[in-house]
Image 1: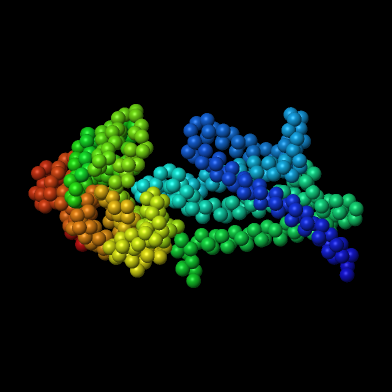
Image 2: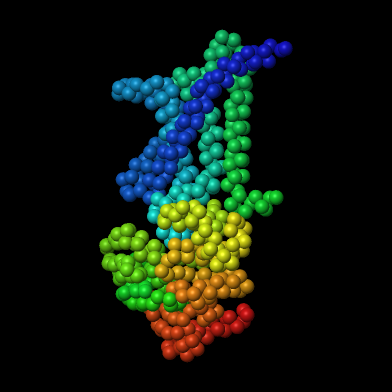
Length: 226
Length: 253
């Protein structure tokens, strides 16, 4: 067996374990929390009264306008100066959640606006109030159009979690770095890490297609494709 | 009984409706007709308060709301008045993510809090009434315009409203498809459903309505039976309008 293959096989369990223990939980948790934050932010921007919508806009402006790596450093290395000490995983989780929240809020805002005004009127005419119309009529239709852009964010997030290595989270990429430090084989190890990220994002792309297929049923597209 | 008193609607400086007072007795079928921009759609939407009048009051049965400039009407009373109505839209506006029967059940489940079985039974009864029971499980995207509109009529009738409001219910349909919708509305009218519709479909107005209101520039020009307004209009303006749509429909027929 060639040396490089042997090294890849030997290091695979360590890298996979780091992925299962840190990369995947960090990705899933910050996506779910970020998506909720994004929804609240989008609704605040679309329907909030002045101070609420202004706060939402300010938040999106700050997060989108500054580098993610800098945000992580501010949270993990900066906040202790004002007495806020966070462990590395929590700091990363907060950073990624804020990031996902800002980007997805724009996606959700666009998706909600894309639902025709007539659908609101139809919902109101059946007697629904704002909340019921939003939950039963508008959001289900907005979800459909937001699947592709949200999947984009999700896939970016999987890869972006490698930045957590810089604030000492022992995730996949940092594990690779550690093995490199003892084996001096950067090319092999980093390619291996890249392959694992590629595999993770491929799984997500596949899930995206399945989700789009599910949503397609009500567009009459399923029947047309058969 | 629906009563509109001194309804006025402005958008900024533009006056869309000027001091309109009308009452529609129970069991009557009224058609609001008139040129585009005359205010018929706006007036119709003032009845279920999708459009809130700037001033005036709307009463349906025991529920009423008063409007005055610079004062917001409480949403509870708006909701109460609105819940007495059902609305059919020009471009159907079925919920695309729900099947035909789910569209009809939606209000019953979400607003009236009925059980699924009870809502399904009621929805099926209404779909049968509009001749759509065979398409109960179809998605709106797979239905023709006429079929979608019939499902929309069933949806509007689901909570047994006091009045069925129709905003240009046949305007998005070709003559053949609009005939099936006119038939359904005609049957409902014969059964005593109170209806108010905004339309420029003369066939719909003359076949179904017993009261015709001619609106122009936000004012009521003429009111009368369909027979009277279409055959012997009193006002010169009504006469011109009726002859123009008569001519148009003769050519298209």
